[in-house]
Structures are given as structure tokens and as C-alpha cells.
Length: 386
Image 1: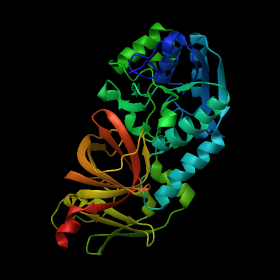
Image 2 (image 1 turned 120 degrees about the vertical axis):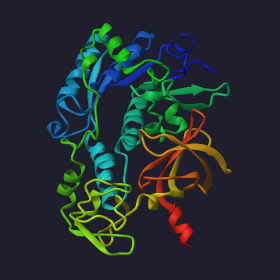
Image 3 (image 1 turned 45 degrees about the vertical axis):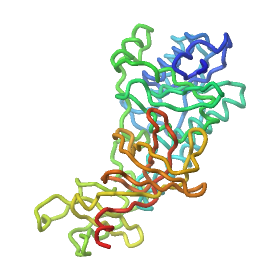
Image 4 (image 1 turned 135 degrees about the vertical axis):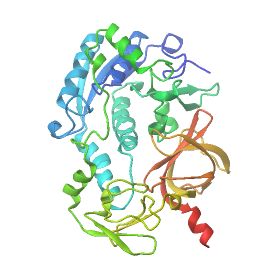
């Protein structure tokens, strides 16, 4: 294992080499400490804040987001304290097209996207990284909690952070080997609590030490996803039906629901068995939402598309663990690539809350094997009925 930026022992320049590092600074404490650590390790660090909105006031304020005017000011002040050059790059149009419009289109199609994952794929490690390399930088540094390991043969692997409580490898599962070659995650091998990171920021004189973490989706100012979508897609009343097709309620837009949802269904009367009902299916074609019992959500297999591999792509079936959401646990699976564009996954035990549009990320121990976008699921109840 070699000491490359992002590997466990890599905060010192490799064999004395001083790397040119572009530190993405969101205005939060994690990215500020990451930039400070990279500079302290002897790298030539330049800070950059990404302006992701043409109208920053439309994004979350109150120090809860990563795209506001106050965030850019916080990032600049942190760069001044660290003693590194700082710039603000306008990627608002690219962000609108690749993240915001993708988010709206996915919900309109009845799927459930992850905009943070898409931002990492399309913005931070595509648009930003490409621009950084064109300007002669060696690596992009972020405050993500994950680790890049370089093997003796030069191949690179993405691993979970040392502290599982803060691990963010799920939203980085879209990175390929080329992108990993230029990624630096100085916080990934730190077994510390978030309070210790804040204490480090305070020791370094960074004013963001006590700044609250960002929450929810940065481009939805009030956190109201359904309201955000309604403004862009319009209200479209439709039926809520049970598994037999009987109408049990109405809605103002099928896009406002996600598979596994229980709250906010506004069904006027209980199910015959008195148990809660959950969203089982969303049909944008006829604007219908189907609800039913929790056990009907059990998924035993799925098909995913657009796989992205963090290294060499597997060619044979393999046993892995899978993570289905950013803060979810792992579950054992068997996964088999189908050509270059599909992945067939079978679960050892049924899982619930699996929605098309979500990302499934495969792990081999702590190593991230790759990710894909869920396209279709197979329910246990449907197989039993056949």
C-alpha cells in the first residue's frame, strides 16, 4: 500500500512530492478542516466554493445548507485563516441541469432519486474535477468521510471511513477509478466524533467550528419536497387505491409519494385489518398511487441499471453486502452483472422500502465495489402468488 492522498497514511506528500490540491469548501466545518489538514500536510492547497444557484437566496439559509451567500462567506473566511488562496466558481447552470432538473424528472417518472449522490457524480467529481485537472491540479479534496486506498499494483479502492457512524461512502459509490485517482478525503481515516472535529476547527481558529450541519436537500429552501415539486410540475389530482384497485383516497400529484411511505397519505378510513398502509406503487401513467400492508413491501430481488464500478468491473456473480440508502444498514446479497448496463441483485432476506431511482451500493467488507440505479424490484408477495 502506498501513501497517496486519501489513503490511511497519506496526509504527508508522497515521497516528498508537494501536490497541487483544490479543496472544495462548502462553508461547513468538515470541508474547512479537510482543507486545513491538506495544507498542514504540506500540499499546495487552493480553496474553491461552488456557487450552485443563480439566486442563492432561493437555497436554504440559516447556516443549514451549502449553497447560500453566507456559506460562501464562511468558506472565504476559513480559507483566509488557513492561509490559502480562495475562489468562487459558478457551476449554477450545470447544477441546475444535472441535479435539480434530474431530481424533478425522476420524481415525475415515479422514481426516488438521491440528489447528493448525483451532485458528487456530476458536479464535484466531474465538472469540478475536470476543471481542476485542466488547471494543473493533482487532486480534489473534500470533507467527505471515506478513504481511498492504493494497492501495490497502483490500483485504487474506495473504502468506508474508519468511523462507521460518519461514513459517507454510499454517496461516493458513483466514483470510478479515474476519479478516485484524484480524490483526497483527509477526514476518512479519523476515528473521532463530530465534536472532536469541531474542537479541532476551534483550535485552528475556524469560525465555522460551531456552525450547524447541513440537512435535507440544499436546493429546497423550506424542506418541503412535495411543495417544491408541485411548483414545477403542477398539481394533478389522482386516485389512491388499494391492492384490489378500490379507491381509498385522492392525492394532488403522484410525484409527491415514494415507495414505503406511510405518513401523509390522507386516507379517510382505516384498512379492513386496522393496520397501517404504505405506498406500494406509483404509476405516473395513470397518476395512481397504490397502498397496502407493510408485508407487501418485502423485496427479494431487483434489477439495477447504469452500474459504475470503483475499480475493475466484476464479470461473474458474487456475494456482497448492499446499502440502499445514505443512512441505512447493510444487507447480504448476491449480485450478477448482466452485460455492461444491468445488475441483477438477490437478497438473502427480504428488505423493505426499496424504490426505483434509489442507488444500491455494493460492498466487499469495507471496500466499495460499485453502485447502480434501481430500475425494478421483485416482491415476495407477488412471487408467492404465482
